[in-house]
Image (cartoon, rainbow over all chains, first blue to last red; front, side):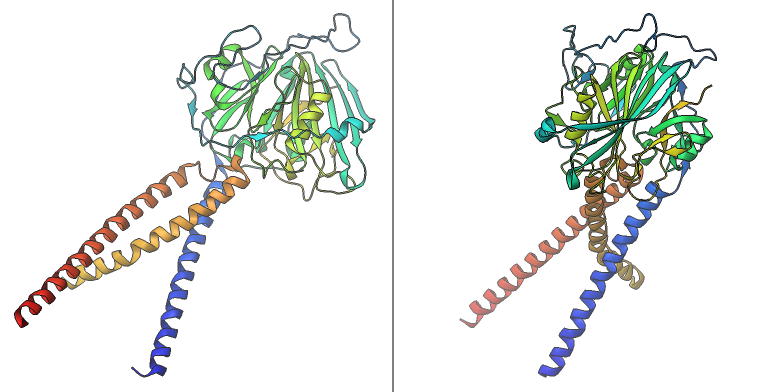
Length: 375
Length: 91
């Protein structure tokens, strides 16, 4: 064969190979696109109305006193609010049992082995002063809410966060709401819209349950979903206590028996149940970067901290790592704390406006945690 | 018969490409899942079925590759035997 013809043949062969490879890549991109479309974009309403596990009465009984009232007493429960491993003994010395004991009766478990990352405390904060400005004070018949804006650090290292210090007479005043009032997948609304639709005085973003088909979802005493996945779970009980669980330590039957009011699946859990920052977090090093964050913390029955940290805005607030968030919650006096959806979702809403500075465009989310407006 | 041969050729052509497409798709899902595990790109009903398809494609590819290798080895052995027989004859 003449060299020229051989060269032509080789060239056309190369072209064929490139075209075929491009075709494969396009097909792969199409495949990914279709999955993203059906899994992440298209809304899907679940027909399941959920199982009512705790009644939401018209008249809610008062269980706790508010600050300044007779009978008010801070009574933090130490040592049993965070459940980390199988067989972990709680503060009464009772073992929570092995991984297989009864947990799979009602709650299905899938474990994909998310990594654990080590704690790296920000020790520089110990020497820094936090500037605190009170921006909201609201007292009603059923709750006492104080929101403060706090700033620590300077210039590019500055962190700005908002702390909602909340006392409620009954945990049932701390409610959650779905986007569009509907339980489903990829159903989203802007947080201020969800808040207005539910007559919320105050709200923060939830756990974005609608992003996934799995995870434990209990809202306002209704059990919607019961798949335990590889993420920590936070449960708020009717007795006012809040506990966090690793997937292997979560006992669904026990949780339902104790009387769950809310349950979120996002995480990680931040504190060890007695106010100390955990040694490891169930997250990845990629997600542990400085970001806007939201968290809920438990101080005592009827006393909670809801925190929103701004970020991605150097000079105003750089954001925080998971460890730094845990340090903030520990410093606020929380015994147990839990990370909620952050990033662009992180928001704190009060009376028709956002208290915090959103990092980027307002993001539509699946759910909020809120307080209803009262006289 | 011709028709069957055409189908057989098409299947043999499609099988490796199916594996490539699904393999590339799963690598993408793995990366997305690493960046945001809560969305669960690897842990949902759709990717469960895709994974099954991926396994089937790979299984069939493996069988096809093994049979081609077997055929190729058989052919080589036969050629070697023929060459040796010819050599013996000449001698």
